[in-house]
Image (cartoon, rainbow, N blue to C red; front, side):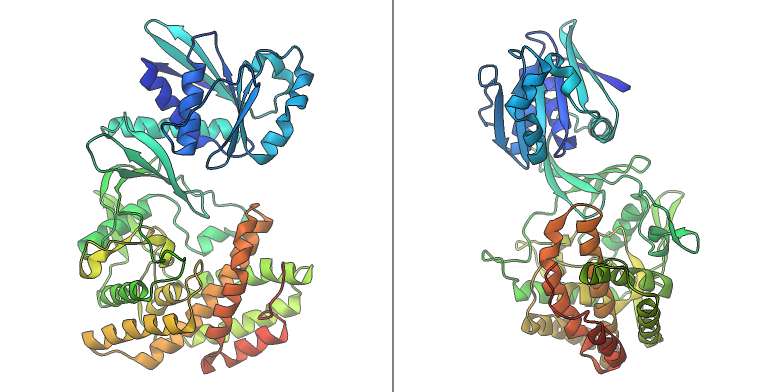
Length: 501
């Protein structure tokens, strides 16, 4: 069993440890708190629960008499006190298994039911040491690994001069990256980015993992290099205040939290148009394919080549088709799919290529109403940028995967981009519209597969609600005359029909 220690000089340090553990906690985790009376278990538990609830004033009474106290935080957390248990078997009567099915469990006096706690439990033992306390963490498995990384993030904050900062969960995404808001009294809040090195996975084609073929960023170095290049070019991306490239930690400027949706959840057309105009500005620049992250550390921006486009499009036949049919895609279907996609990609020959941010859509764009012109748009997700067709990011924006964009708003967005490109100089609008259709079809085919994969492989079913929207986008893209063959193939195999997963 692995272990580590932390000296806690005072109550504030104990509370910070509670916050650090809260940032690492996930549904299904068990955190076992050991220690004598007065060792600080209640202080740590209270800080942990308040951090999960993002409520510094939340009342967190001791569950000594109720035995269990439940809280509706970012996910349910159940606080158990087993002091009055006489046997481990009594844990079942408290609904322990049901609690874990719903969320996480924080257990005081766990030694009363130690044999009943699951493998993978994270153990924290607090003991008096001098004028402070010593915390000993031990365990095996993902919960311990996450706690270890969270404590390393606190160490990173210490080196950055933000060791006393409060930590609150900000946002996660479909990858392993996560973000927190960190705050210190009297200073503007910052964003703590946790970007572990990418786990490549098994080979899937020609001896290479999917991420290598698709050119997914493998470390935070890509973010840093592209962020520097964009900032130098006048694009509003977060300034980097501190970095640890080896561990994948960044302390970033907080650009804000306002997005592209109105109070009713509807897209605000003017903001999409402004984002399209920003893309037009970026596409008028010449971008290098080598960008410096730090002295002597260079990131080579990969190409969005045919191999990458096809491996992404294949997610539809790998995941979406089996969901529809209940069986793997046949060899004949896959062969026909590749034939039509290769014919479509042939038409990109001669298209305009530029720096392509890849996920240029509303979740990754901040609206800053107090700014002017392009500075109103803060871009926060850049690490997977490639050199690829300029039309791709326009398709990503105008067919926003997480927001229902009407044909009218899609047209306004496209019109804003096209008008800005014409105003800047010579622009082949017909070639752009064809490339836009191809890239929109490729992207939405990929997303259909990704959203099913997130449900089937990763246990995230809430992505399936987006499938009808993505199918609608795909139908729009395939309506372009250049994609008639691809449209007919999709239609013949029922890939455009409304289905219930």
